Each structure stands twice: as structure tokens, then as C-alpha cells.
Amino acid sequence: MTGRSNILFLMTDQHRADTLGAYGNTRAVTPTLDELARTGTRFDRWYTPTAICTPARASLLTGQAPFRHKLLANYERNVGYIEDLGDDVFTFPAALRERGYNCGLIGKWHVGTAKTAADFGFDGPDLPGWHNPVDNEDYVAYLADNGLPPYEITDRIRGTLPNGGPGNLLAARLRQPLEATFEHYLATRTIEMLERYAHDLREREAPFFLALNFFGPHLPYIVPDEYFDMVDADEVELPRSVDETFQGKPPVQRNYSAHWTFDTMPTEVSRKLVAVYWGYVALIDHEIGRVLAAMDRLGLTDETAVFFTADHGEFTGSHRLHDKGPAMYEDIYRTPGIVRVPGAPTGVVRPEFVSLLDCTSTILELAGADATPAVDSRSLLPLVRGETVEWDEDIVCEFHGHHFPYPQRMLRTDRYKLVVNPESTNELYDLHSDPDELLNVYSLPEMAEVVGPMMRRLYTVLRDRGDNFYHWMTSMYDVGDVEYDPTLSGLDESTYRDGSR
Image (cartoon, rainbow, N blue to C red; front, side, top):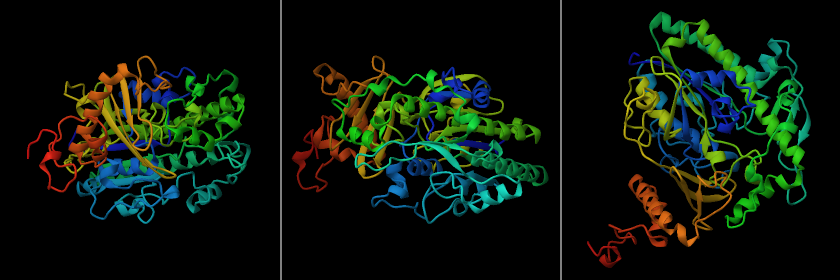
């Protein structure tokens, strides 16, 4: 490939890895994404840096972990954090623009309130918010121009809140044909921009970065009949973690279960929700297929790298939860991640722990740009090309809150997951014997030999990154020798663990 590859970045929102055939779901209707995996590289341990939309998307944009870029919460539930990135923060589209790239973004932005995607150098319609903005003027015009009916829903699914009020809308039947869905509209606008960028590529050799960011399959799952009823709910097997008791878990998890009204809905409704969610994924797969077909038609496939991933996962009933929140389970931290680079080996499956953050350096390297400013990111290209490289055998993730501040840090290794909850119960899960993360073994005496090294490893990573969460750990856990004054005063050398100064 040349030093300036075209890049198509396909991103979904709140998407579980186990909804795709390529990740083992035998009932999935995802031929497009399965084929992308067959012709590219599938990463089996692809994680989000944080399971919440705005911070995760800001990390992709900057190549910085959330604690560093400091955009820590979605503005809709913001409880005092900043709502926009600073003017001096590095972002990859600026670097690509300097390399002569066209940069486009069609779909979900959700990286701040005052600054739009256009402020960061992206072409495309302004589509703010966290859900399909079905009243957006460009979408409404698209419906009118094509003689399509307006948005209308029936068959709403919701539970009952602890205070007796109606719960959040979880799913509904969309009374529009496929061609009128917001997903079809997004794919159509993407194809139009691909055509424009293909012309620029031919006429003035301008490469492109084009992102198609779907708002789904984030709840509420609102899809037309053929997808609402595509999967037989009676044949859906609920995850084992619906047996969650929350015994030995942080109490906030039980509170979130009540907030998401899981126990107020019968089992058949929970099965239907999973079925509709899978249908939503199938709808998105269909629309991605349209975009990739257009890329073939325009002769772009052999010179365009393609990414597919999500900002984070979704519970869909796992652990008696929906959406996401302060619970660092695999359901919301592990996501699909597929990368296809022309000329690279096909059908590759990589076991390394990688992150959405790593896309930033990969994009920059594909564009021949300097990836150094993406300080928390590492290029995936050596793995995609099948090279043997040293790679961390664990991954660290973070969370800062959603409805309220709630700091968490997580270390995931091949077998274990450690979650530090400063205000509550720490968690340790043995993912070999307990892949559903039902049994918190943190306090078991026999697990001390596991907790100790993991706590010290987490502490070291956070300290070396400059994530000040490590200060809490210094005084509360055995983190090994401390080579600095934990009081930050410089007044008492006895506070050094090894007695040095």
C-alpha cells in the first residue's frame, strides 16, 4: 500500500461481539460483516477504553485515554464534567487534512456539545445527539424527496421504574419500510460521499477517510417488521448471567438493574428484546453491505482499508441489566473489532488485547502521518500483517460515571479480571471457570496470590500513564515499593516505602 491509504471506518453504537456470526452466533444474520472478517483480521480481544459513548468516541478521535482528554461523560447525563475537548487537544482528522485527505463523517458524532464534527474537519450533515435524530431536517428532506412515510412506532416495550413510573423505552416496531429507516438514510448519504470522494481521488489524487457511524444497535431497538420479527423469540437462549444475584457485588449494580426495570418484565419479553436486538444488527449489516457494494462499484476496494467496530457493548439482559453503566463486565467492554487492509493476510484471528484507542495510531500510520501525538494508542498494522511483535498480555480500562460520578479501573488478563471500586466492593473474576462473571472471588483467601500481582500491575500502569486514580491505591492496597512521597508534600521522607529520599 502507499503512504496514503483510503480508509472506511464503520462504527456501531452499543454493540455486543456475540451478535455476529464471525464471533460465533449461529443465529446471526450478518453475512456482510462475516465476510469482512473472512477477508480481513478479526480481533477476539478488542476492548473499549470506557463503556460510555462520548468518552470512548473522544478517545478514538484523540488517541488519548479518557482520564487524559478529560471528556468523561455523555452530556445528557453530565454531572459536572467538561462537555467539549480543549482547543489544543490533538485529533487525527487534523493530521489527515494536513496530508491532503478528504475527511467525512456520516452519522453519530456525540463528542461534545459546542463543537460539531465539522469543527474537527469532517464533511457531512450535522446529526447531534445519542439516538437516531428522526426530526433532523436532512433526514426529513430525504424522506420527502423519496416519497417515504414519516417516522412512526407501535408495540412499545418498557418496564416499570422503582418509583412506579414508566421505564425507558427499550424497543418498538417501526412503521416504515426499510428504505425509510434512519440506517438506510445514513448508508445512502455515505454512498453519495463515497462517490464524491472517488471523483476527487481520480481527479486530484486526494485520498479519503470516511466514517459511517450508526446510532444503533443502541437501545431503544426500533426496526421495521422484517427485522422486528426476523428472529423467533422462543428460540432465543438468555445469557446465563440473568441468574445474577448481586451477592458479593457492588450495590450499584442492583440499583442499575432496578433502573433498567429488568425484573418488572416477564421472561418472554426479555427474549423478545434480545431477538429484536439481533434483528437490529442484521439491519445494520444489510446497510453496510450497500456501502461496501458501492465501494466495489467505484473501484475503491483494493485501495481502501476498512475498519468495523463499536464504541462499547450492551447488556441486553445480561446480569439483569440493559444499556451500560458502572459494571465492568465483558458484555459492555469487549466489542467486535475487524480490520481489513489490502495486501494483508486474510481470515486472520488475533488473540492480543487491543483497544478502540489503537485505531487512532493505525489510521495515522495508514495515512503516512505521525502517530506520536496519539499517546495512548498503538498501531494494529503489525498484527494485521501477521508480524510477530511484543504485545501487552493484559489491558486496562476505566470508567468515570454516567448518572453520577463513579470511578472504576479494570485490569483484564487472559484468565482474570480485577475491578477496583474505591467506594465499594472490589471485584475479581476467574474467566476460565466463570466466563459469565457471576462469582466475585476477590475476598477469597486463596485468591490473594492472584489479587496481589494484579493490583501491583494495575497500579504501575496507572502511575506510569499519569492516571491519578493510582493515588487511592497507594494507601489502600499492597502496591509494592513506593518511590515518591504519597502526601505530595515533600516534607517527610519516612512516607517512602523503601525509606529512600
